[in-house]
Image 1 (cartoon, rainbow, N blue to C red):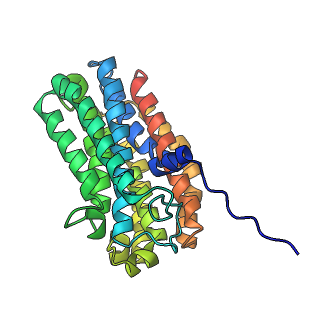
Image 2 (cartoon, rainbow, N blue to C red):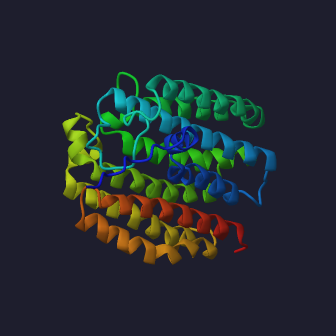
Amino acid sequence: MTTEAAPTRPSRARAWIMAARPPTLPAAVVPVLVGSAAVYRLGFRPLAFVAALLAALLIQIGTNFANDYFDFHKGADTAERLGPVRVTQSGLIAPERVRNAMIGVFGLAALVGVYLVFVGGWPILLIGLLSIAAGVLYTGGPFPLAYNGLGDVFVFIFFGLVAVCGTAFLHVGTVPGAAAFAALPVALIVTAIIVVNNLRDIDTDRAARKHTLAVLLGRSATRAEYLVLVAGAYLLLPLGVLLGLAGPWSLLPLLTLPLAAPLVRLVFTEQGRPLNRALGGTGRLHMIFGILLAIGLLLPA
């Protein structure tokens, strides 16, 4: 007679790392890299760059903690979830500790933001306050964005347009055309990450009355949305060159097309747990695409 070994419980440190969701952190890093690269020749503030990177990471982690905490309390995270383990729902970390960590991390982001406001003025203050508020209201508050079909819009705006353009403004006090152009493909692909996440969770979200845009649109339209977002990011690159908003090296992200094509095929042919592969792949695509775009913007035309 044999007995099945009980699953190993992760250490406390490992549990907190899980709560921070390291695979999501490139979504915070890429916009800072791209926004800085877009204005590098006009002006670059090294200390501001480091502070912006730190603030972006803290806001991302704080948003992840908020998502873990509020989704558990609203019943969206259950034992039937198809994605990675969530520390609150699984009992790895007590809910009040996750809530306190969320407050603490957002507080640290605000402290870093004091220096950024000193450098960039009131527009940076406004961006910081809105970003932290949106991080909480994404799944918390009386009208959580993710529960009312606005999660995709939130990600597109704050992890794409605002993050890239805000970084550029921090360096040079304005948003040049190159930065505005570069913000669009970054915003499109980072939104594709949340789209495939919500596509995977359509059934469990619907049962929990979490009305993501995927739940409202259905599988077919959500798959089409993913295709439009990914294809749009690539189509924008030659358009930016033709309009004179970026040099030919900004076409470097086209090298990632062999990574994108299998992801689109996976999204259109699978559902449920197998979409975890598409989720991880889209995150990697966003990171590599963004790094290549930043390099392309740095290289001379």
